[in-house]
Image 1: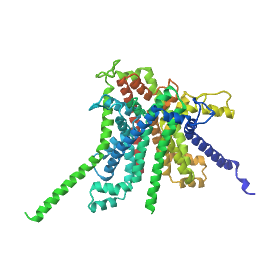
Image 2: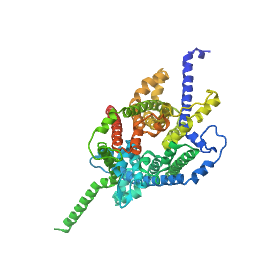
Image 3: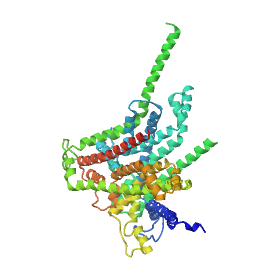
Length: 281
Length: 302
């Protein structure tokens, strides 16, 4: 048997490496899943306290969540603000990305920096800045501070650069000869943009808009600075409730927020599959 | 003037007009984005800088004036100096751990067969898609005495009495790493994807052990990526204040927590602004550091 002449350490090393790989995989999966699963499990708890093990299961706290006008109101605020943020940031981000892709203009790097910079700022700083700048401003009797509108724009400070970044990358994938052909055939820039460019990048538009929606839905530091009792979002209400007392109702709120996000993801996936089918046909 | 010359003139004028609109077009397209960035970010930042020099008197948010006293207060009063120091220390510690875990994770995904890839990327995306507050709440149910951790350890028989890790610096650390991990992972994965996998095979064929291959080949190739990922995690960790303040001990004051306290609790806008400016400067230093790394890398490749 010549094979047994292999030294022990050479055999040991791959086994050790494999064991290490497995241990690390288990660790990383557990680490990422723990807070999520704990919340999911706790939302079906029947008891009033947060305590493991859970003895009886029920949908009690889901009923409680939808019965509380404070929480459903916060959810409605969250959705409204997220929709507004999506509209603002998608429109401005897509147009700016098209300008960067299609045109040559002076100080391009400088403008790029201006648009991208807010994305790197901590939420605490952005929230404070907007609160200081627009704290006491009233337009035609409309109190800007504490309004949903101001939160939408504040959230756009993160969402707009993200849309811009994603769309700039997407626009680069367009075949420029098609755009030139459209111009040569006499179509104006606006018509070319709507009829040629937009359909070609629809997947990018849908995904960047939904990411903007998700960012706004989840954000709570800026919203904490900029909302009052009537306009507070669900994450803000969760944060304030957690500071006083945690109940399984918060777990339900977390699950509902996550469900809204994963609904968005499903939409992106379905859209992507639809586009794939269209092009392969 | 002949009819042909007149037609030429009209065409020339139309072309000039078209060129002019062509020149203004990019600015028109950028204007909504620039309005958001300048009116709601640029101007507020300048106002905040101005605000940080205003004077503060009790019962009023601020009184216009010009004083360096808030900066002096931040850099001399022990409570604030400790907060700045704690923030930097905790962020450094968390970013180190994030880079180590993220590096291992990215390498794992890179080395594993492609069919695992999508599942792992989905796993890494999940924390990004869930609100920070939900994650805080998840850990909030995991660490305390009646939490899952204590229950699991008891049932396995590792401990005999309930334990609580809640409101410790360890809990704050675990929560902070969780928040920064996905960003770090995706940066490092993109670096790994640019490496030719055959390098590893070649190294193995030449008789190098896995550890030698890692140390001599992978580490040098990913060094810039590690630094970028580290800086990114550091920026993110410094700006995140909710997680450490909710999971850590009451005495764990970070810059973000104190900004919020001065702004909402004490209504001391000038001091909150001065504190924010310090945070902005810290973030800017790190960003400039990363930019210089990137230009160095491109110079190296060219």
